[in-house]
Image 1 (spheres, helix red, strand yellow):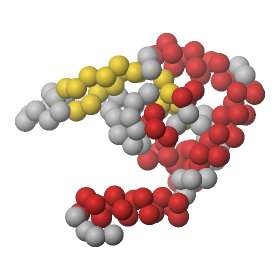
Image 2: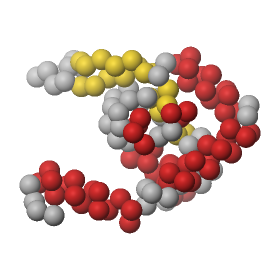
Image 3: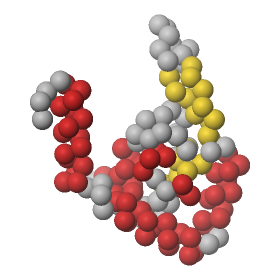
Length: 130
């Protein structure tokens, strides 16, 4: 199956990630017009609508690694997630509005739209002039 095929049928994607960071599958889903429920942590809280964010507790741990490397770990509020999914499933208008929001947000997540941002970031990290 092609990657685009994975995003053809879902009405909603739930990603209760434990580890932080920008999630490419979430961006892909939203770019395909599919709403994504994720923990209310950075950077999710900077680009997803608040109604898509689920409360999460934060801890910094070494995650049992040796040598110890600090890792952001998040525990999502499972009850809040359950209630949010039930509310979406039971309310066609809410689901329709979320899909419209996903399409609007997704319009800015095309490769053409994101390429300048990625290029600037990689040039910065590599110490290269723009």
